[in-house]
Length: 222
Image (cartoon, rainbow, N blue to C red; front, side, top):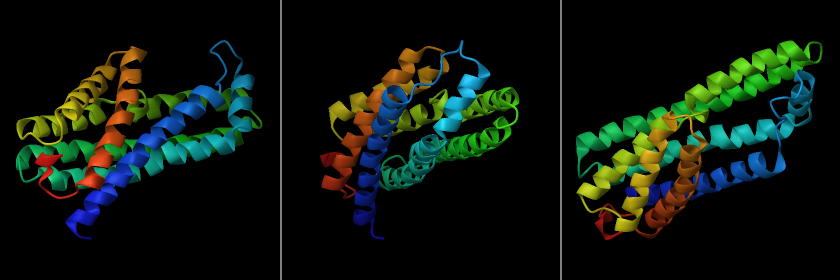
């Protein structure tokens, strides 16, 4: 696939990534309501069992499909930046690929774990929820609970763009916001996760549009 075409494909993937974020926010925040912490294990298990199909699908979309599309975007952005700061661009891509791996692993663990606890919970809901607690810790630790790696990827991309006047000043500023917010999710405050999520949506869509409109290597015109 020629570079110009691949840049456009990366742009479309970036826009879809933003849409996946929005879909996940709507489903987790508005459609599905996980039982409160004071709910019994049976109540929590019933929620997971009753919503097994939709939870499995949203996990596949939010993690597995997200990771696949993100891999395309990481490579296409590397093509765009490798001619300016080759070593930093390579390091940036490493963090991007690591993020891809973490996202994919989180999704597969979450779905396999969900299937397992639904099967176990038929006979022992309390044991199932105990296992589920461990699964949640693992998936959150891999990436669901913090966005450090993703934040580093965006931050390093933005540094390359800043040093070489790539993209517009506005999207460079947004990139710094996304990057620092992602790194700060290491602090257990929901505000940083919210800032990262919302700003990342705008960043994905904006970058995608720019890559589709002007996919050539001379990105300094963007």
